[in-house]
Image 1 (cartoon, rainbow, N blue to C red):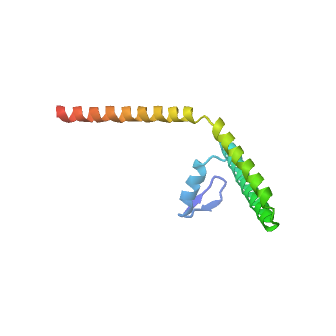
Image 2: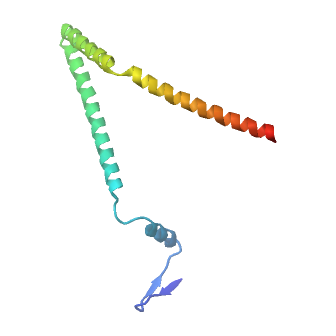
Image 3: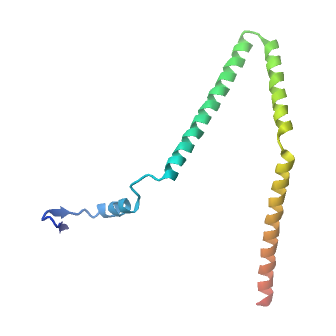
Length: 127
């Protein structure tokens, strides 16, 4: 399984390397822009996860420290602020518009499935 090259050298080919060589030929050698942006997007996503994790760890440590220091009144105030913040987020979220969009998508899907069922019934009747 040797091959004579143009420059007179002999190349010994391995049977198992053939598939790997074809795979290497088919894959682009340059990184595409999309690949860079996907890696960048994944990196940002991981950074956000780490920040979120550190935030919750810090919050848990702060609450534990306040409980340990017997500062329950301060915990009540902080929990009240947290509830107010949650209620503000819910108040400003546009749930009605989201529900309308979801309902419109569901209606469209139901119409499509009903039309496909009608078409399949007509095909059975004609046969």
